[in-house]
Length: 454
Image 1 (cartoon, rainbow, N blue to C red):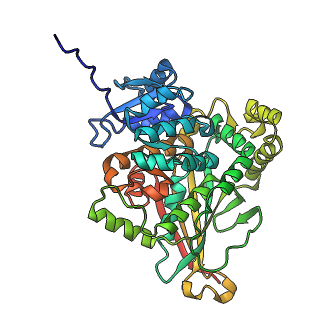
Image 2 (spheres, rainbow, N blue to C red):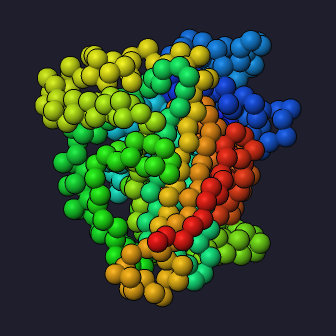
Image 3 (cartoon, rainbow, N blue to C red):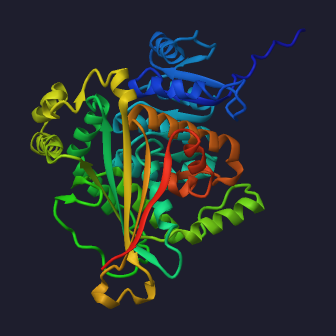
């Protein structure tokens, strides 16, 4: 009697992009296509996934234009269908999660990857989502060999690598006490954000109490030792003459992510060892983290004219006033262009608006030429180092570049990275060649100035 033929095992892809038909997803597809064969990259096989096969196919055609769409498999999966996510995660070495807001759609995707042992990178900038995923999924991800890393887009890798870059300029015995990022978004056309970003901000404000409750339920983060007293709070808005910017404090995911990385490194001063790391990388990892000095970190957003601060203030006020109750949130989400003074709209930016935009992020470090004398001068810093990270438009060019390069690091250097668990991007990618890869793909890291403070 003939033995029944067994069905072949489903193909496992190097990278699967989930949320591929979304506004950001189609730009991630476009970036990923650059690294498929015959390009000599570790990305050999790619699949796209979303709720609608037709919409994903349309996104692929858009991403491949003006050339023909390549033969890339399309998988159907829905964040509301756990079985479809489990099947999807079982076919991915690295799953790129691009469907936001992540508090609504991201946890289910990360959970499926944790169970399947697939690595998962997302582009969330939502602190509650990131911290909840760590609380809920770290142990199962660590056990199953799934590396889950949030904030692998403009939020928050340029901030993390920019912090490291500035921190490592402080040669002993000097040390920073504070490093503040000053973000400037630039364009000769209008700067417009995607609706999902605005929606995430609104829902994040509405869920602020849930984030605080989550933090109270968790062990306190380990605090790094930083020389000298913490910097003064300072005004909400000020004119920075050296940078030529009017700057305003920004409640940013970057601040949260950098602090979580510094806490992790305080617990593991030599960083996180790789599951099968090479002796050379182990030495590189230890050298890297020994050269990173902790510092107080914050983010400000800046504009050349004080008039440019007005839309930022108004957007924050509207979210603060209306975001706390259901009807107010429905108004905000129904009329994003009105309540953001044109910063966000449901249609998102045009291709011309995307291609014309860029960013500069200055990292202004204040500290001590000799950290052993931090108690002198009344604790007043006597040294300043300014560095800068710059690159193209943040949401649809820089974010895909950062996400795809992070995935390529995972594919090519997996043994040098932790077996599994939920971590910040800095804790995982800090010692790797990710900064070099970003510099080769359109971002710049520069030392701007060093000076002694009066």
